[in-house]
Image 1 (spheres, rainbow, N blue to C red):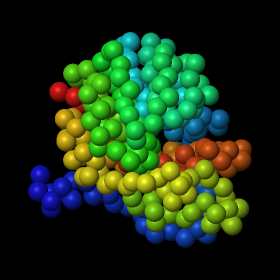
Image 2 (image 1 turned 90 degrees about the vertical axis):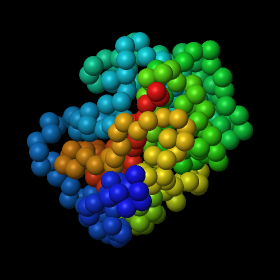
Image 3 (image 1 turned 45 degrees about the vertical axis):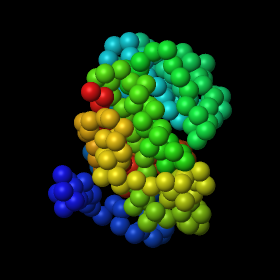
Image 4 (image 1 turned 60 degrees about the horizontal axis):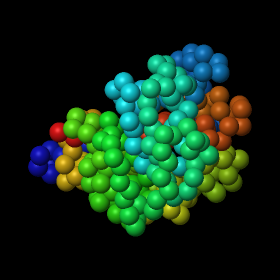
Length: 260
């Protein structure tokens, strides 16, 4: 694919990630409406139902062993029984810098600094998830290559990261000045962030790691995200307001790749 065709293929359009003032975004949070009739109390469930990360997890092969890189608290384990279809059959293997709150729900939890070493396993994984982790690593290409080597042939990898364009969004302190709180929106709000990647750059990285691109895009959930922002605002649920804003603003990019 030449550079012109590549740019056309990966272009992201829309108003969402244009430079935006904090006041404008705070006004949106206060005025977001459930315009499509999402049932009361179900906005978070429906939000995740349409999210590519949730779709990847719920459509893994039966009995899949999933490598969760950058597992954080281990909250991914909650998806085994939350939302349809139930996936209690999935075997989880987590990696993080420390012991996560839900590490006990994993078959194995490895405490490891991926900037220094990569753990070894005696199984080949049926899937790998690297959600919001490559942006924080000193060796993102090497980490991709290692994770790819841990996959069985035909297994898939899900990668999600914050769009470089999110740097144009207001910082947390700017939003708080307008009485709106978020966990993180602008990547500079998290000092652990050190890398940014465009979709074409990530596509080249997974190709270099020996994987084949299957699906990619921007996580944009439109009125479903609006409904979540409205419901979360009323409940003073800062985490869900953040999820909704990311989904409305298209602040995340994702890619699914397969090992031949």
